[in-house]
Image (cartoon, rainbow, N blue to C red; front, side, top):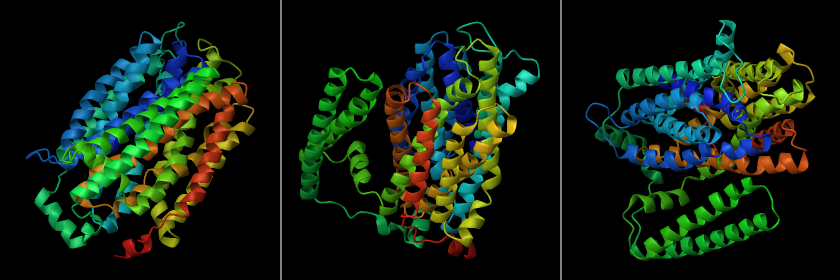
Length: 500
């Protein structure tokens, strides 16, 4: 069930470790890199709940419920991975990132629900830990590919504006691995029929969360609430957009004011008008109303996810410019020093994924001895201090740069990929597992959009465009996420689950 994640994460790892390098090679300035990354989280915000909603309602006699989406996403993502490193200009690369991330999301979102579908509650912590293991292995290999190919004699430098062959061939290998790994899961795994799922759900009494069928008056009242909130959000979004324009602030902030606040308000207005007009049968209304009535644990985990992924996105955006400028002292993308530093970032990302693969199976043991939320707290605090430690490194030694910070990040990464999903899946109705896993992704992509919109502003206006400070902000954010995880009401202890 989890083997496909090896390929999916190879795609994500190549993206995370090399896209900033590709953007800089094609002429992007440091302050412009976050806004170029905005395509990735925006795509996830749109694609994942839609894919989750439809995969809940899909049943193919041979491919089942989730596997049609695995396969379609794998084909599209593999093609995008091959095209991405051949981008001729910056705008083309930004567009390819959009397409590539959308394709990866089509495959990835149903995989989360897949484990929830196929495993009983007592096996889910181990099931998501298995996903973390394959994610770690896939990302480790993918992150090391440019260095491996350089060692084998493939060129690691290129003329100005040209992506080095070591990066190109890494993406080709990643595209092939993505398709093969996902195809393995499609061919060799099985899914339960809708009738069997209904029987399991009834036996486990998961329908406790299901809302009663709402009356017409409820929809009218709820629509009025959505309409008022939407008007307020649009007003705030437009006013703050004008202030950004008037004071000539960084245009990245438009992502927050126009992209999140204003468009979110527009969605609420549309939902409000439709419900007041008694048009309540469509998928859009279902998505909007289910979002507002999500389980309490999901709301608590939302804040933990927000600050965890804000930290991760700051690392993925700024690690390459931070290492090459802060430690190697160069911003010349054609220089040997820059490309050595960029390859070292690949090694760093490989190492934190290797740590995550190893730690993945230790987390359930620690959770059994303590609790899942305390385990998540320790892991996130370790990751936060790992990011902060980079500020105190002044020489490009292998241990200090490639390993010391990444041990903590790897521990956090293993926990981020498993513990929240294990806690969440037990509180979700089986009939909406895919949709709510997609909605849970909101709290991964919204912080990424916030990071893309404000990090460039913060680094430019307060830290003299020194990217290493973005890593300090990210470290503090991850520590805060760890503290917030202690407030999660995880009623089902891992000890009970394992004993069962």
